[in-house]
Amino acid sequence: MDETICAIATPVGEGGIGIVRLSGDRAIPIASYLVRLRSGKPLSAAKSFLLHYADLVEPAGSETVPGPASQESASPFDESLVVVMRAPRSYTREDVVELHCHGGPLILKRVCQGLLRCGARLAQPGEFTKRAFLNGRLDLAQAEAVLDTIRAKTEAALTVAQTQLRGSLSTQAYALRDRLIALLAEVEAGIDFVEEDLRFVGREALASGLRDAERLVTRWLATAEQGRVLREGVTTAIIGRPNVGKSSLLNALVQTDRAIVTPIPGTTRDVLEEYVNVRGIPLRLLDTAGLRETEDPVEQEGVRRTRTAIDRAELVLLVLDSSQPPHADDLALLDQLSGTRGILVLNKSDLPRQLHESVLPPSRQGSHAGTLPIVDVSALTGQGLDELRSAIWTLATGSPLEPTDMAAITRLRHEDALSRVRQALRQAQESVTAQAPQECVALDLRQAIDGLEELTGAVTTDEILDRIFSEFCIGK
Ligand SMILES: Nc1nc2c(ncn2[C@@H]2O[C@H](COP(=O)(O)OP(=O)(O)OP(=O)(O)O)[C@@H](O)[C@H]2O)c(=O)[nH]1
Ligand SMILES: [Mg+2]
Image (tube, rainbow, N blue to C red; front, side):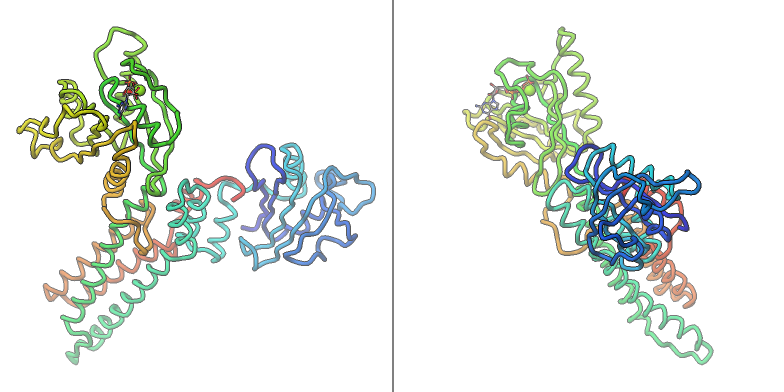
């Protein structure tokens, strides 16, 4: 934290402008070596939060004793708009300088190298945000939301990330923590006065307080799947026999002619991948080669790749051709789906129907395959696609609900912490029921409170921080 860090904050490659960011105690003096303000003033005199027009020069002097940029001799290599944000009113709560230059990779590299030579060090991934967290500007859930905001692939994912960035998750956690602290205070008051046999909280009131808290945590945990899916998306494989319309379905869902469609069975050979937004869920769709026995070595390889795709998929759309009588291979595929989240897509519903849902032999009723949702669609006319999207949403998020206003938890870390909170609350209730000493209840309550503090990062470890911030890009 004593060091001043710098990094290119804009994406790699050419751009209209490129920004180099500097943060730390010495951000302003270090930047001064490169920045020559057109106003003629020194950078240290520049007002905060204003753009200052400047020339960028190679720092004069040797590497160890660089001369300041105001030296007349230095010739500029770029012009720049420079902004100074003095602590604590900056992203990191440290002094921050941003140099807005022309967005060419060589220029940005030169600026960075100059800053490094003058005493800055290259920032690690996410280090700016990490400093914002360590300096108390963001809590941990908000820091995570910064990353989710950058990475969001759909509007819904962005909404969740932005709500979390505004602090919704932490507000909810703090509100619950306050309730538990109030309960704990009463329990502890009861302990202190136990000799006089005073009971400050009645057992009933305590039990119901704990029960309410547990219910809230359970409801909260239920948002985990939705949050995760919105953040990470769902890998979905479209599989089926040749010619049933898998590629047509992919095209219909992504609304472009992405995959080649022909009446010839065995058209698709390689696994095709495309992202599509289904009700806010980023779906990574894989179109695969039709599964069948074949002598053709190219198609055999396609079939092998299809199997790998099925293994990797979190959701499988098994496509059947409803204009054909049921085929033994369809039933075989159905059986292979057991244990996988899947949807039976009966395609070609625009044609006269030959295949009925009763294709599932009675032996399958009640088995896993018998419980798969079934949707009629026509990839050709688009009929039934909305129902398919709903079915995907329900299956992927595990709930038929649209996103709620409850701040969804988005990471395994949140889920893990909240599970421990719930466990501790249950334990506390058991202690109350068993008329265990108040100390036991107090201990459980403290554990639940600890779990909530972990969620917001009030209590955390270096290991957790490293894991979170290493996911970031350099410069954020
Ligand atoms: N009538 C009708 N025809 C369809 C429909 N969907 C696909 N087809 C036709 O079925 C044929 C095969 O479609 P594809 O999308 O290539 O089938 P596929 O499952 O990808 O086939 P392979 O890649 O060979 O495994 C094409 O002639 C499509 O035009 C549909 O909903 N209705
Ligand atoms: Mg195909």
